[in-house]
Amino acid sequence: MGINIAVLVKQIPDPSVEGSLDSSFRFNRSGKIVLDEADLYGVEIALSLVESAGEGKITVISMVPDGETTGVRTALAMGADEAIVISDSALENSHALATAKVLNAAIDTLGDIDLIISGTESSDGYTGTIPAQIGGLRNISALTFATSVEVNGDEIQIRRQSNEGIDTLKASLPAVVSVTAGVVEPRYPNFKGIMAAKSKPVSVKSLSDLGVDFESLNIDSQSVISIDDAPNRQAGVRIEDPSIAADKIIEYLQGTGVL
Ligand SMILES: Cc1cc2nc3c(=O)[nH]c(=O)nc-3n(C[C@H](O)[C@H](O)[C@H](O)COP(=O)(O)OP(=O)(O)OC[C@H]3O[C@@H](n4cnc5c(N)ncnc54)[C@H](O)[C@@H]3O)c2cc1C
Image (spheres, rainbow, N blue to C red):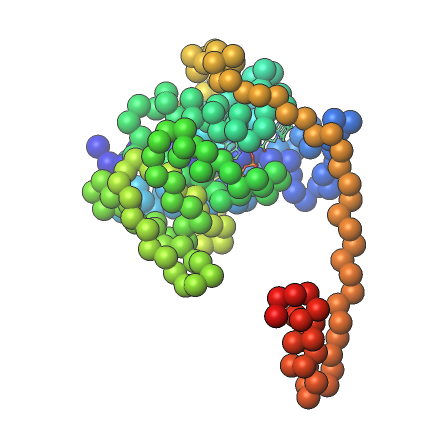
């Protein structure tokens, strides 16, 4: 039986190429598409959980324009078992909640899922809201910003770095976990993995393939009305004489009203 895991992975424009916005201020996604590096960590954690459980299944799920599959093939080459890619022209202009609803509908097609794993935030859009939205839509716990994940029976435990120290959180399965980037070393797909990935199932689905009527998603439309460049950072104040540094800091904090 083992553990049944869905990993949400975003396929994004190649970050080594300078990005651009179209006339509607939308990110131009027409060039080379890759698996978001932020999602390699979720795939790695899923693979290690299946290894610890002895058996299990990992399905990667991605919503993307134009039926792109290059990024999910990377996850399959690492060792995931199968992929679902949702692509539908009706989803053009989808904002984060719309994306979460569609990903959730795809998860529904997998039957009994023990765990849903995502990154904490994507590299290109980064609202950082998808994992909590999926938790809300499914009415299950969302354990966010995990630095380590353990599953024991039908309970999950994560550790999370906070300002105060390390929090340990527990919840019953099924649950959603968002994994902090950089916490594990994602395995590199080897030649055998890359060859095996070619024959693993990848199903590209439209909304109707998922059995979802666009209207039933109840997605309010959203548009970006303007974008301004971020202001240049102001030069800081440099204090070179340590004997006056503390007084200067207190003076600064009093000036801002903090003290
Ligand atoms: C007005 C508007 C129009 C937009 N139009 C488009 C569009 O036409 N085409 C388009 O592609 N995007 C579009 N976007 C962006 C898209 O909606 C967001 O990228 C998406 O909602 C995910 O949000 P995020 O990147 O902030 O996710 P975050 O919450 O930052 O991501 C956290 C994690 O959620 C998972 N995740 C996020 N997105 C996906 C995904 N797509 N598939 C699988 N897992 C995912 C990953 O595990 C990721 O690490 C639009 C956004 C807005 C505001």
